[in-house]
Image (cartoon, rainbow, N blue to C red):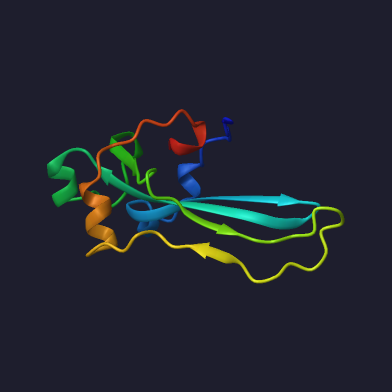
Length: 122
């Protein structure tokens, strides 16, 4: 296991239309400049207060936003690389997430996940 830490995003740089709703956390790993794995997690950012969910303010109130991460179903893409000299990379092998009736529905119904990464907070 490893711990990934990064600075939290600067809320002033997040476009207002992208502050809430479904997004992803994407972790890309490379060796000698060649990507060998990519792991993506779906994330839903929403207000915890039902009133704010129904009537969101024009300017997002980041201190009232909760981040729910679908950590149990990462999307993993592996790339074969030459570990000796990182030569040409063949096409990726994709491990698809299990299909659900609605990806958005699955995100909205998931329980909150506690994560100890600074990068996950606004």
